[in-house]
Length: 453
Length: 171
Image (cartoon, rainbow over all chains, first blue to last red; front, side, top):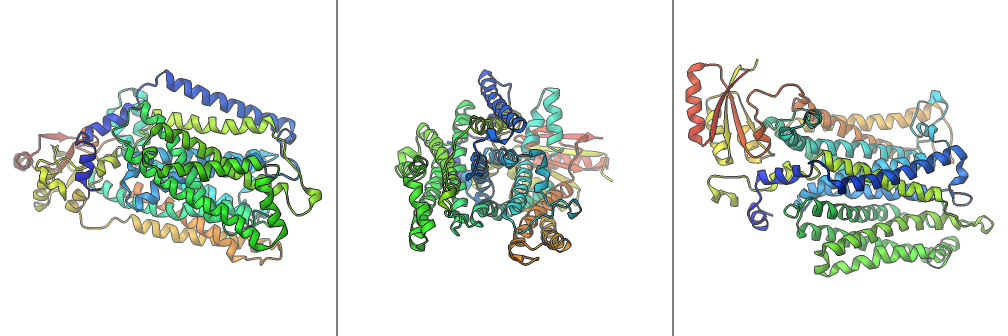
C-alpha cells in the first residue's frame, strides 16, 4: 500500500495528532462497562482459584483425571492457550517481515494476547501437578539436587520452548510499547500516570539515533520471533507425537499444530478486537479491510487444519495398523463422537462461509464465527488428548472420563485470569500502536506532491 | 561534554525539517532530530552507518547456541543415565535446547542493544531541547551551540527552512 492509497482509504482525515488522540482516549477514566467486565473476570478467576486450592488441599481426586486418561482437561487447556498465543506472534513478527501493513492497528492487541495467553498456558502444567510447589523441578536444576533432568524428554523441551517463548514475546511486546508509552507520558496529567509512564517508557524521546537503532533492533526481534513461533507449537506437538500412543504418534503433528494455533489465535484476535473497536470508536483505525485480511488468514489456516484432519484418517487406513485404525474409528463414532463432530463443524465447515465476501466484512457475523472457531479449537485438543488415552493398546485398560466441577471452574478461571490482564492492559497502556501507524501514514509535507514517492 | 545551550526548531512538515537538517549538517554542528515515528527519510539524512544492533544479536545468538548445547551435554555426562537405550549425548534431542537458547539469548542481547545504543533508561532528565510535542505530531531539530555569535544565524536558518517556532533553551 503506498502512502497515497493509505491516504485515500482514510479519506485523508487521519493526522498524527488524530492517531494519538484516538488511541490515548482509550486510556481515560474507566466507565461502568469496564468495571462490570473486570468484575466478571475477577469472579471467574475467584472460582478457578477456589477450585484449585480445594484440589490442592483435598487431593487430586477432585479433578476428573484418572486411569487411563491421565492428561485431562488441564493439558487440553495448556495446548489451547499456547495455541491462542501463536497468532499474536504471527501478526506482530511474521507479518512484519512480510511488510503486511494491515497488521499495524491490530498487532499490539495481538501481542498483548500472546503474552497473557502464555501466562495462562503456563499455569496449567503447574495445576496439572499433584504437588504444584514442586513445579520448580520442571526446570533443569543442577544435578547436585539429584533430579537429573532428562534432556531427551519432550516435556523438558517444552519447558525450554514455552519459557523462551514467554520471555521473547514479553520483551518484543514491551519494546514495541516503549515509544507509545512515551506519547502517553507526554500527555499524562495525573501524578500516578505520569510516574507510571515515565518509568515504563524508560525515558524514550525519539531522537534520530534512538529511532535508527530501535528500527534495526525491532527487525531483529521479528526475525528471531518467527522461527520461535514455529518451533514452540512443534515442540508442544512433540509432547504427543514422540510417544507411541495411537493417534498421537504422527509426523504430521508439528505443521498441523502450528496451523491450528494460528487459526485459533486469529479467531481470538477477532473476538477481542470487535468489542474494543466498537467501545472505543476505533473504526477509523481498524477498518473492514483489516477484518477481511484476518479472514483470509483464517481461511488459509482452516484449509490446512481440515486437510490435516483428513490426512490423519488416510494415514491410519494406509498404515494397516489395527490400533491406529481403531483409534480413528473411535474418534467419529465412539464415546467422544460429539467432540469430534463439533470440532469438524467449527473448524472445517463453519469457516467455509468466509468464501463469501459480504460475510468477511460483516462484523457481527465475524464475532460469532470467531467464538465458534475458538470452541472448535478447544474441542480439537480435547479430541486429540482424550480419545487417544481412552483407547490405547490393551482393551482391559480402556476407559472413559468423568468431568468434575473442579476442572470446569479452573477452565473458566483461566478465561477470567486472561481477561483480567487484558482489561488492565487496555486501560493502562496504548492497546493500538501509535508510532507504527504514524510510520505507515504519509508524513505531513508542505509540498504535498512529493507524497507519492 | 554537551553544550549548555541549544536552539530548538519545531517543524510541522518533514520536508522543511530535512532542508534544515541538510544545512546544519554542512556546518558540522552537533544536533539531534526528534520525530514522532521512525522515518527512513530522517534516517537517510542523518547518518549513513548501519546500526550496531545486529552485532549484539549475532553474538547473543552464538553464545546462546553454545550455552544450550553445553548445558544439555554437560548435565547428561555429569550423571550418565541411560534412558530408553538412547545415547548419553543424544544430539537430535539436544537440538531443541540449543535452538531455543539461540533465540532466547539472541533476543535478550537485542534488548541490551536497544538499552545500550539508545542510551536507555533515562528516567530523571530529558535531553536538552526535548519538547513533548515531538512525540505527538511535530518534528524537532535541536542544535547544540554555546557560541553567542552563532545563535542568531542559526535561529534564522531554522525559521528560513520553515520552523514554526524557534526557541533557545539552557540547562
